[in-house]
Length: 259
Ligand code: HPA
Image (tube, rainbow, N blue to C red; front, top):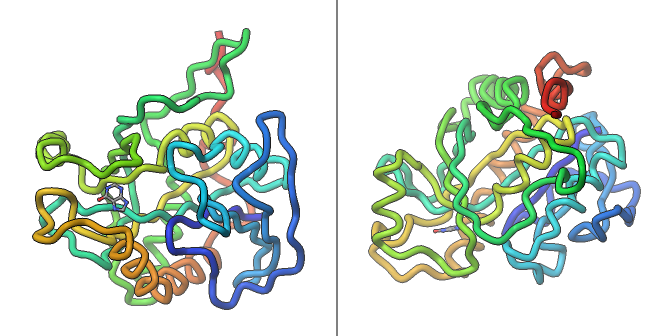
């Protein structure tokens, strides 16, 4: 089973044949919503909208631990995350899709680990995204002639407010390419769960101070809606190319990570 997390504006995947909606309880509480389980491009996929189907959970209140544990309990080994981002790198425009390879965590008040009890665990996070899943997306974009920025650094902010122009200028000097509010702790919780995790960022707007217009949520949702078709095509190609068996280090993330 492959997990799929949808971000703002991505609540439906065209062509997704839903067989079941399943509520999952976890020791960390309830995930954002029920999981929609079905068939997508020949594979069993569990879809979860990060902000719930009603979109009433803001980024800083998402129960990231319950979401990731939910996928684990369903038996997923891999999670593909889609999210809306603001473009910082001047080469990016709204509608561009970035396959992340690095991240910087600027969140402030989120529970960011499963290991806050007696177990002392420090997972390696040098490469935060699964190399094998990344490769599937790169190959799918090449095969389908789909424009994809094959690497990029994501900076995760706490939100829910948008950034100041000075913050974006600072993030730019730190080599961040895109900014969003949901990539962390999602990515590290997946690593701590030994799940493969890959993130596809859809640029919905130019970041604060770069954008010539006032940033609005309407702009973000409309841009995401415009990108749904191409995201779907990319997902279909990539999911079809994901090997049946994992051959990446993600499944052994906890080896040598504990004290
Ligand atoms: N900043 C932070 N998060 C976002 C943005 C942004 O400009 N656009 C979409 N998500």
